[in-house]
Image (cartoon, rainbow, N blue to C red; front, side, top):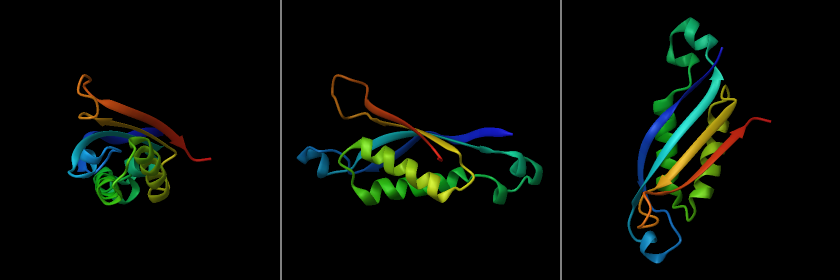
Length: 119
C-alpha cells in the first residue's frame, strides 16, 4: 500500500544565496516535500512508530537549512533529499521543490525541483 506523505509550504528563514546581501540576513525559502513509502504497517497499527513522522521531517529540514547556510538552492535540495532518505529508511522516493521568493524581483519566485529514489 504505497502512499505519499509530506509537507506543503514549509517556510524556513535561513541564509541562502551567492550575493553579499543574501549572506547578511536570513530570507525565506518555501519547501514542498513528498515522501513515498508503504503505509501498510502504519495503517494497521495506527501509531506514529510505523509511520514517517512529517513533523520530525520538518524539524530536520529546518535545522539543515538554518545550520548549513547554503549558497545554492540546488545544493539545499540535493542535501535535503539525501538526508530524508537516510533518516527515514521506509521512504522509497523523495520529491522536493524549493522556492525562493526574493531571488528575482520581477518573478514570484525562483525554484528548483528534485526527485530522488533509493537505488
